[in-house]
Length: 422
Image (cartoon, rainbow, N blue to C red; front, side):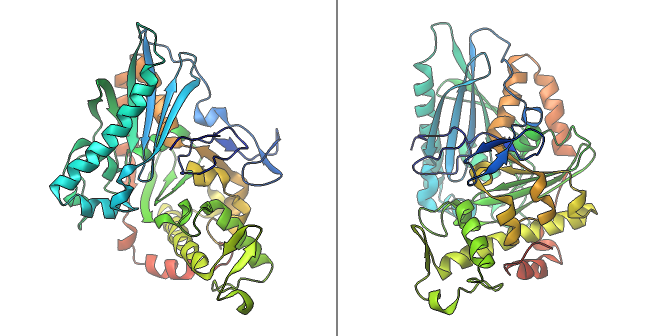
């Protein structure tokens, strides 16, 4: 499935959550009005955080391809020597036939023939993207790929057994960076952090400069899986929580999760939705129509459960780090969900801390941005420097298992209520 409109302010006809919408930052110093996230949203490009459009210098004749293999979507970008994107290829991950989340894929991969099929499915998508890009190369040009993926996707793509990812204590033996080839194209694969915090998050940390900055940053990557990282150059803590398909259109078919958040916030403000998540009696059975969207009780509940897991995870991270929400300097919202999310609406329903709404940065696809930064260093012959940076990220990031945190269940149950984040 190709993305038809990915410039700022325009939506694809069908949003697959590829996150290719550009990164933006809300600020008051230099304001530009955009349609992303709703009428009147004020945004400012933050090229300092996400690297900007720098030339890709290095070995002559090599064109960079960055790849994000997500649970739901596979996105590929081709760059010119000036650092600009010259083409892109986006596809729904064909592994979705085996389930919407990584646990379903791990279970399916217990059968060797299905594991092999899942590997071939992604390889075929990558090959189609490569063949498309190769048509645009000059005679003396060739491709170099940099790929970021969550741990399960990496395991399946590399042909590693996924059993250890699906059973306690959820250990992952294969977390180091890897080099391989796809359709004859050399590919560098980002290292991971843990069984459920993978190379896409390492790339995201790299993209927003968290491991280089003194300011305290909270990276929130919401999709089928929800990953959270809090920290700076001195210390980072990360965790993963299962958001399910609610944020990727699974709550109401055809309605992107960010829109559902805004609708629920509006219903809450109008008194049509109470703090327990119940619609007013007149709308309880058949739902309420807002414009061309029918908001049902089932859809409300789906968003509630997903947002509670994220909110509880954020609370645990803040507690483990020993800080309050107001002490966080920047909130980075990654992915397609983050691009269209209204932070004020997210705070209204208790998804995000209200004290961070004004500090939010929309990072776009931080996995691809991190891959671009890594690719720039590879093309410049700075592989050793890149590996040192990634090792610093991995070694200095602590992973916590939310299920093992004694306060998680209580915080989760409290966060199900549709109230402002305290």
